Structure formats: structure tokens, C-alpha cells
Image (cartoon, rainbow, N blue to C red):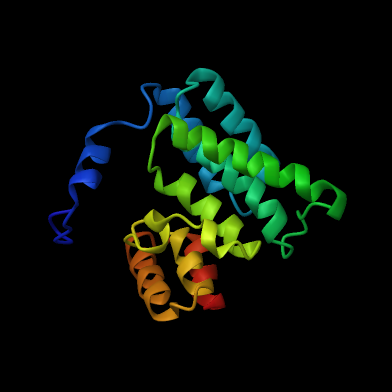
Length: 179
């Protein structure tokens, strides 16, 4: 953070001081699931289920689970999209897991981002939380909300920043390619 001259808001400082889980094993499962987001989603779901079983208050695991379900209704390129008759049930799962994450960690940027993406995709612009639409770009998932809302320069700038911070993220580079 010092080398990058990063400045953190008070909320970001508090988030850094509080670990996402007290279980190192649950956190390891979460990180492994996160690395499989775009490739092995069934395995990612299993890993997250195990992480949640170890720590039922692990908000990040719930929001990542919501994101995995969201990918099933938004990403047809990886051949993992749900059939039309399964869409409604999948949307319910997205909301269920995101709501659980937000109940455990109010303001969780990942939970807010997945709900905002769901609302953008469903053209429910008025339901998007001001925390996401007006907030900072500290979460890679928020860039899509800004891009879809017509703020492409801000979304592109944030994505380029994420590519510098995490050069091995395939999702970030895919986002840059789409933008």
C-alpha cells in the first residue's frame, strides 16, 4: 500500500483490520473457489459450500456464491448459462446469497456489486444502490455497472488499475478486451 501510495477511506481501513473469517481453512477454500470463477464453476460452488460449512458468517463466501449464480444467467460464452425455465430460480439464488452476505456484512461491496449487475441486466436501474452507482471503484465487479450505465471512461480506468494490481487476473483482462 505504501509503495502504491494507496489511500484508504475509513471504511476501507476498518475492512482491512477485520479478517473476513476466523477460519484459515475456510479462507483457503474461498481463495481456491475465486480462482476458478471463469473455468470450473461447479468445483467453485463445492469449495464455497465447504467454506460456509466451516464459517457460516463468512460474508465473502456468500457474495462469491451469488456471483457464481449470476454468471450462470449473464455469461453465455462459457456454455454454463441456465435454461430459460431455470432463470427465475437462479435469480432467486443470486439474491438469496447476496442478501445473506449483506446481512452479515452491511455494505459488502461484492454483495452490492452482484445485485447491481443483476439489476442492470434486468433493466431495473432505479433499484441500483447509490453505494454502487456513486461509490468508488474499489471492487472489480462495479466496473460493469459503470460501463453499462454509460460511464465507460471511469470503468476503463478502474479496470486498467485492477490489471496493474492483479496482472494474473484473467477476468480483468477479459473485461479490458470487451471494453
